[in-house]
Image (cartoon, rainbow, N blue to C red; front, side, top):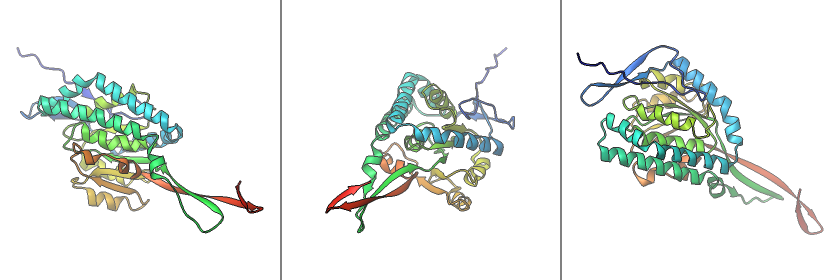
Length: 292
């Protein structure tokens, strides 16, 4: 008698924990031969609400971390991913990548995390400014995180697309809720295990799996989500933009080819930052200028 393989069940990642979906539903991920390779939770609207609530609760303390410390945490993610490189390669191969493609995707993902780790304590210095004014003031503009960002991961990429959309968001001090690739979700949940052991506070990153058809609306219309990041080829781009109007969410649609070098940069961080301008008065005493 042929043995029946016990498939791994990949859970959600919410508030630093690995719950099953409250709906009790799941779906099977298939390989190229249409054979099941894993059971994956089918998230519901309630899961989205729980994840957003968790992200909001964690965002303040993550924002208050020093930029240098956030860089250390991101670098730790890269270290942990490097240590589990073989597992990620295997999962990408299960999801129909060749061994060479899988190895390249994992290596590029690790390099991209290190890249954004380096930007954590530098992007504000580069992008901020001292502004010329005609009054007796200093005028400074600097960036602050927006808050909770919804990420609809690239559907065609199991790992690199997800990493490329996630890292600039948390590098800038935001928290997030991610809808993983529906067809290639395995690395997203395994990445959650890496995040859980990499000093990332619970709730800063929340990862949901399931049907994008069901999840795009509750995420993009949620009034406590401040921005949406998604793939420019996502068929719901226009609907997401319309659903984001009520609380003026910022929506950014990116190329889905994150293997290109131009698909990384400081602009991916500042896309989900608010520009804050501060006026500092100058008192003139005896011809000299003094700030106070």
